[in-house]
Length: 128
Image (tube, rainbow, N blue to C red; front, side, top):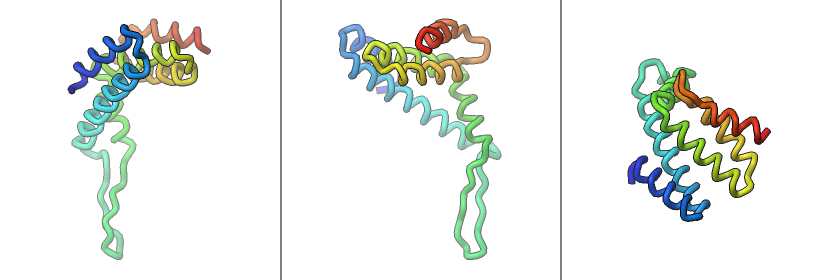
């Protein structure tokens, strides 16, 4: 299944009251999205440095730009925001307030620049 199919199935399961199964699918969709972002970031210049030690061992150093590029890719649209916000709602519904708070914080961080994330901000305010 692709991200959209996983999201649609998760929404159906959530409506049907299958919260744990829905959460699992939302998480799987987010992991797929994060993997896509990481693959994109690895293709960008200056995200890692390869070196060889005096003994001939190869070392790859991950540079901060890799994380910046990954985050930039996740923020290119609202998919990460929506997935995380949906996960936060389910976490709250099943009584896992800490996970709900963490998901909302991450959703806000990954919202596209200028995107209206007032619903996540309001939810976070109520949980804290």
